[in-house]
Each structure stands twice: as structure tokens, then as C-alpha cells.
Length: 447
Ligand SMILES: [Zn+2]
Image 1 (cartoon, rainbow, N blue to C red):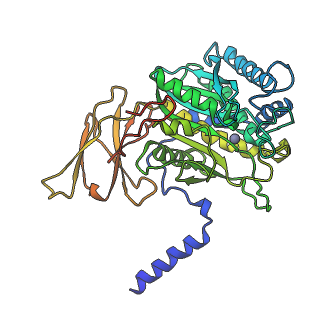
Image 2 (spheres, protein in one colour):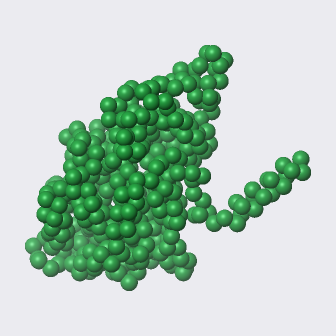
Image 3 (cartoon, rainbow, N blue to C red):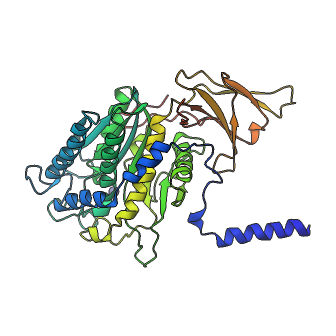
């Protein structure tokens, strides 16, 4: 009893003294560091990200309804500059980035006169060997002073943090991947700079629906949104913690993506704290991952630890309040995540289970279909109360089934594919959540 009590006291002491954000997964959950990917993270530079953000701010306003004809002011000038920058990187890699405008005419239903606006995303579409699967990483280049007036599209709206920071980070990723992976990866990667976020995630909705309609499999869709402020309004500072928002359900695709990013952080950027938040977004807020999540794709949001609500959507969201060393930390975590997922084979399909009779029902057999591009598989295990996978169970080569010594009644298993290059797919979870309900506004239900 005494021993038990002192262990308990010691454990409580750790809980009390360790800062909340410093908690990390107990392990990397079996992910393996890719030496090349780890080394190219060093090519992500704060100074370059600052340069992109400075240019974005220089266009005065990037409101989705602002001037599109001026060469120096408004959202048109901003997107032509993004296109031209990305186009240069595309030429440098002999066409690996395939830069394009993605334009959609969208009625703005939030306004009573429902004006139809041309919402134009800029995409860098880096083709993979398998072009049917895509990893999307985006940020929104539109800005607003909508805390004053949602429809003021002429006043200066610098949006240096929201979301010049995310846009600049995604541009730096596009440059870095085009430079170091000019042949592409296993899966296509779309670097997406969205418009219309501030008017109801219009650009990302258009992309999510387009990819669904054209039959692509979205492996994951990320947004970097508000990723550069490190000081809260009361002076509290944190320039080393990144929040990741991963929606319910606990066994759903977005939550699993959250576990993956958490483990990627522990593998590639172990000195940076990750605070997983198990919900879609901050309370009452939304972002460009939401349209993907709502249609059943895995989606996730990266956001700074401390937002400054007194500057968001106001003329004071300026460059002086963006910490570019911190934005670069977010971009490195993004790059490690995107690089790993895009290098991995597809996840296993049709995971089934059977209660093992020989063990009196205490063990379970896990079965799944062969994935042609997988060199092998592994099974992950966690109790239903655990936020992260707790065990990695290797599967002997050539097998697509295994009896595991775990009581599945009390937890979850995940089966993931391992490529010949060592990269792991996301895990297919059993029991799986019910299929998502059909989305509204032209969306279709997931499979
Ligand atoms: Zn934003």
C-alpha cells in the first residue's frame, strides 16, 4: 500500500509540474525517421517566409471582393504574385509543380444581396506516381477587417497572421518540395492558396467538392491558419507549441490524422511541443480543413498556441506581430507530415475481425485486404480511453491477418501499410465509425 501510494504521489507530482503543452506521445508510435526528409526540413527559412508575408501585406487588402485589376493593390494583384512565384519554382524543377488558377463563381449567401464572386484559388499540383491520391496542404491568402465590417473591401486589411502566415508557410513548402523532390512522391501533393475563407470557406469548399467529383482520394487535407502570433493579449508567450485540431469521432479519419501528426512531431521535430485538440476547430470558429472533414475526408488545422483576439480581422494584424522563426517551426512540422504521408503506400482496406475461440474469446484475429504497394503491415493497439496508440504489433512478412493478444472489446486496433521506403500510411481503424451522412450543398457522402 505504501509503495503504491508513493508511486501515485510521484505520478501526480509529474502531472502537476509538467506544463500541459509539454506532454507528448509516449513514443513516436513506430514511425521511422527518413534521413532525407529530416535533412530538407533545414531548408525551410524564416527569412524567406517573412519575405512572402511582407509581399502579401503590401497589396493593402486581400479581401475576396477587393480590386482584381490593379497591379499593386487588392486580391487580384496578390494572386498574380503568388502564381508568378510558384510558377518560377515550377520552371526551376522542369514543371513538377504544375501551377494553376482554380476559379469558381460563388454566390455569397452571408450577404443579403447574394453577390456572385469569382473565388480564385492558386494551386501547385505536384504529381505523384499514383495520381489518384492527393495530400492537400493549404492556407488562405484572402484577408479582411471583418471585426469592423465584413464587407469593407477597400480599407487596408494586412492579415499578416490571418492568414499571411499560413499562406507564406505553404508557399515555402511548395518551393522546398519542388526543389528537393522534383520527381514527385508516391502520392500527389496539392499546395493550395485559398480565397474566400473569410466569407465562408468558399475556396476550400470548391476544391474539396471538385476533388470528390473528379474521383480523387483525399489522403489528408491540412490548413495552416493563424500560425505566427506567439504573444497573447495579456503578455503570455509561447513560441514553441503548435495546436492541431482533429475532429471527432475518436475512431474517425481526422482524429487518426491528428494522432499521426502528433507522432510525426515526436519523430522529426521533438523539441517542438504539440498540443492536439480533439475537436474540429476553436469554439465558434472554422477553417479550410472543415469542408474536407464534412465530406468524410481526413482533415486537420494547424494553429498557434496563443491567438491575439484584439488584432484578428483588424488593421493591427500586421507584420510586427508575426514571429517568423515560429512560422518556420510550423512549416517544418507540415513538411515532415506531408512528406511522410505522400511517400507512404495506401492504407489497408476492408479490415475485419474475429473473436478467437481458442483463447476463449480473449484474443482477436485481425484480417485485411492486400495492398499491392505495401511491403508489409503493422497493427496498432490502444485502449478506448487512450489518446494515442499504445502498442505497435509487427506483422510477419506476407501475412494479411494476425491473432493479437488484446481484448478488442476494450479498445481499438489500426492496421497500416508500410512501404519499401519505411513510410507508414494512416491506420485503418476497427471498429470504424458509421459512414458519414451525405453533406449538403452538392457534397456526396463518403464511402
Ligand atoms: Zn484565417
